[in-house]
Length: 610
Picture 1 (cartoon, helix red, strand yellow):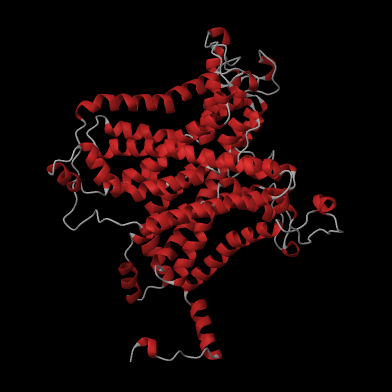
Picture 2 (tube, rainbow, N blue to C red):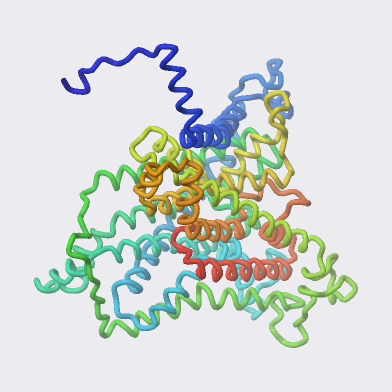
């Protein structure tokens, strides 16, 4: 008799009791149960709360809603205001169109750029590959909002009240070049090209070069080999890079705010913050849900596209080998291309950014009469032009922001790395089982949201007490910023933890179980020691990602919880360009030091998608 034909046992009280005891007495089952409850409370409930808020009348909108509306009543006011009012064009449709235009053009520029760079580094005989590979990834380590400040240091004109490098030389810089969509697209492209570089280079390393050599034996030219052999094999990686790039770029806040707000050019992310801070907040929450929906559609479209395309086996049982493609006469032009790229993406903007921190007046050149250390160590009494604050190393706001950044990255990274290992353990040991799949699906939800949309969800959840005060208001507290940073990085920590746990064979645990070792004994003697290196690597990668974060925390900031990223953004908006640049340089050095330390522990920058 087959198993399908066996009758199901009725769920009696005794059987239910045994099932409950099995969960309670089995430590692994308890870990799974507690983890699922925590994920539900930290991810699903806040999302549902934000959705409910968009249909609930708030105190500030009672007069507009009319009809005797009371606080907490059901209403469609916020959605009607956003979708079908006289303001809907300015509120939603124009910012949405701007976001989509930026996303599409960033993809058009960054994905081919990253793919070409990956091909050069992995499949060709281009010289100096070890150094070039490191230099190519450094622009990605630079926070995207810092690139926006670098752009302003070079192209800023009198519209912002102070000239940048080129305007200081007497060159007329139009607003369309200094600010707006072109500036935003180019800055984002110089950051998000890394997605395609990382993904495509990983795919190229897995391809046996014999496939390309066979095409060459058959008389195919290099362009034909690239078009008909290499490109189809790496297409899934390119598609994934396209999806990740567009989903990230349409939700990025820092670059769009620095380069767009100055001329009234808004994206969905920047417009959303206006409504969150100035009201109606329900409209801001509804706009956040639009961002979440866009990201979900884009990601699921990618899964559909990759899932139905024909797949190719590129790794066989014989073991692969990689023969580098000789570039021949193209070597010098391609080296020139790399030199120009690195100069424009890293050397020039960083040089101008650093030099601006030493200028008395931006745009007045680098003569000794215009250079000063005031922005770093000066006092108000020593200022050679009007300002109302000390240099950053004497500035209490900066020192407080430095401390907040260090403790946020340390605390959030430790918690995230620990949670990631537990979630990875559940996912790896529960593959093909309902609890493993459910864990992966819930952990994936924060990945669907841009940083500003995710923080909006937590802002909505914790701005007021819930459940009769059982869940207190955390608005304005450092705890809320830590909690938001931890949960937002669950997908990356879980992915790292899963890869770490899959490398630890279950046979080791089974052998210990047979020998009579308890669950906690197996965890302490086998899992934790073997997972140590993976934990350290995951911690360092999360540390770097949180250290450069701006989009995720900007809505949650208060004067006492400001980080260096937020302080630099605020100073830039207020016209303190040199001090904003100085703080950016400190952030960059902080990240570079962390990256060097991460490399010492074998951390792979390819796993960090911050």
